Image (cartoon, rainbow, N blue to C red):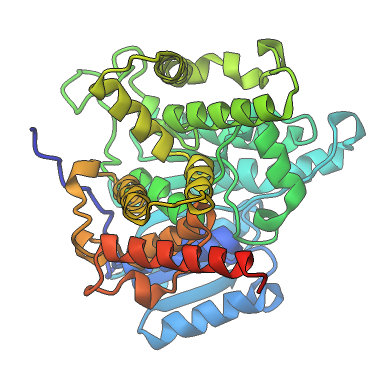
Length: 455
């Protein structure tokens, strides 16, 4: 078996400044905490309204990090105004000549949920201002910095530039501009990356909006938790060197055809997870009775050539899963593959767990084994390692789960097993994964007995 390469982690220079635009929203605050955990100690956080008009959580974050010796300068700046941006960059260089600006994260957004025919020209311009004019202004204002000083120029964009939702035309256009602008900067020999995100649930007002959640579900987009969002953000800061045309740099699929393809990172399009989600939907539809929608009812972006490689993998995953489920004489290897695919689905785990717990004569040891296996698979997926690298006889903490991943894992326990696990219990080094599984099963069986007794 080939050794699994160690996972790379982004590290930030404690002696440098990093500029974050739109840092006081829900995603922005997550980014701030994340880069500070990885070494950043000097941040300039820009917002159009200023911290005084931001949420109390923003001020609390600044105070909390300040107590840890992290210097955060919250400044009011409209980045669509070129003069304001230019003065800002110049002032940082003059006031702190020994603390260079080494990175920019542009996470500002401007949502306007309105169909194109109802947009006025002013609303259109306002919706594009932060992402389009703001990106150009940040680019032009940093041209005066010494060549090579900036390590990264990251723009947080959206998969809506691919989904092309009918009521988000201005937002779609703004994100599409940033995706192209990243490629433009790379052609100039400057670092730039746009990271296309889907819906990040549970963060900020938008992340808790049920209408938005349903919209992404209809468009077959996978939602992200905060921990998953940060894990997918990290590649934007790794090896952000400039792409060469000589083919000598580290290669990836499509590099020869498109040397600047590393400019854009697509997330939330996991072929295996997409296939598992579709399979669950088909199972639910089959139980309910309705006819499965035709291919013409599928999202339009399925035919977008920008995601053609992902869709090919999706078709392969779907075909393999269907082949496995239709065969009554599976080999042991096929059975194992199908089981692993099923374990990736939270709804599959929840249905199986509920079925086992409510069985007439539930086999405790069998259920514990199933739960321990599901936990091991979840830990492996969150750590980006093979399941064989997770030992159920050891604790979750022993496998390198940190607080961010633990928060996501707690959410997984609640969704997949209906279990509420506190952080201390989850990261208890004395409790193995198998022991944790046993406690969850015993609690569920006890609850079942209480229900049967009428308590």
